[in-house]
Amino acid sequence: MQRPRTSSTAKPSAIGPARIIICLTVALAGCAAAPLQWIKAGATEAQFAQDRRECEFDVAKATQTYDPSMRSMLGQDLQRVMRQRELGIMCLRARGYEARQ
Image (tube, rainbow, N blue to C red; front, side, top):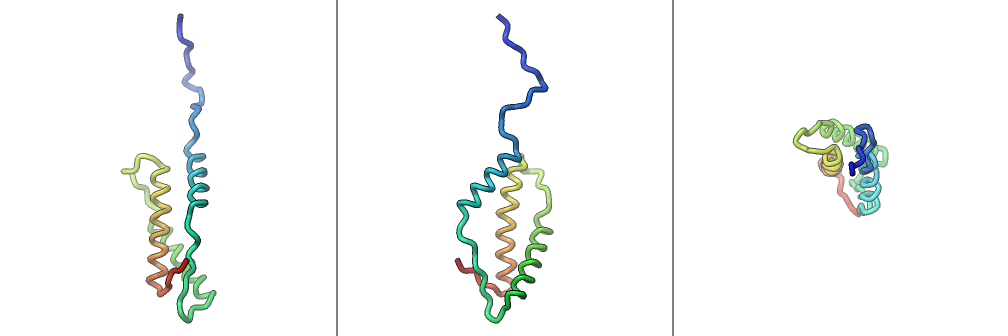
């Protein structure tokens, strides 16, 4: 008895990488700690908003590279998100803000 042949054009039944990223993002967001509250003596909301935007811009520039040593895009995305959070915290602290939960 011959085994049925599978077509090379058949779609794999595995979940696609984009769906995995979305699922992990949602799961990690649900498990994340309470957002940090940033405090700086004498700082206004407008000043904080400006500092935060500048930090976000700097973090985005610093983390837009591709790392060929990572074997998967999922690994790179998770690593990038963790690094962005770390750099964002460091940037605001360097500007004199203190994080509280």
